[in-house]
Length: 343
Ligand SMILES: [Zn+2]
Ligand SMILES: [Zn+2]
Image 1 (cartoon, rainbow, N blue to C red):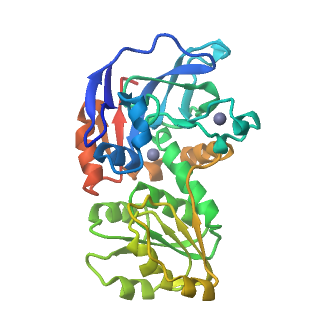
Image 2: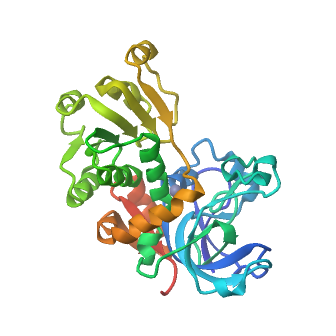
Image 3: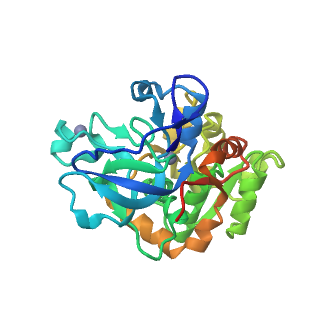
């Protein structure tokens, strides 16, 4: 089967032909992949930005960690009647025997492996994952939308971390898919949402189509003038990964406001901490969502399929994956979904 892989450190990804997995490990299932999304993480892996060195021991490794599919085979200790179940899966797999795992504390496992990062992922026809990582999809949820579950859990976690509430005015920095998902979930909580990007015409247009009115492209307008119209913000959520934007936007956050960082930053940010102290502001980080939140996100997707489909800018066959990587890299795409097989 065709697979898009990382075969060696350094820039680039490669198509390889690999064997369909035969022996399914105990506790695991073999999933026939329908759709898998390209994520910012995949771009970082392709460009080999620092922070992914631990992948080397897994190479060649198939990428792809945001996916939907159907269970086709089961390993030992998994009931055979789950065959045929439509699922998505949490990509973070745990070791099962460290101190945290023995306490059922998945998030703190010390030797986690990411599907599509530290073990084979879903940019191919079949992927194996632990059955305990799977979440059943409602019949009404289309498989392309279901492939958005993992990134939307990241968005849900960011909105929860920021304690977004009805009536607040929230600034979202970075209109990529994560920023877009955050904007949608913050709006669904009743917040007024302002979204800021730079050279982000296509992505901001997507957001306009999704009903957002307060859109700022700082390649067209002066950032400070544009933000002043809405400031002070009750909270700011940063999903751009541009370190200088932290200091540049903090002055627009209200006293005791929350600034949540979701972006992955290539360099440290310089911040005026004395002003932060006097303004009694908080900076929080937000990353992976707990397993318990996944079914709620799946229900949200099921109830908002038309809206969510507007965020899928490209649906491409796996063979066109590199076109998708380029579109994502060029900020033309909101979300690129790769189609794996016949459905
Ligand atoms: Zn991702
Ligand atoms: Zn563990």
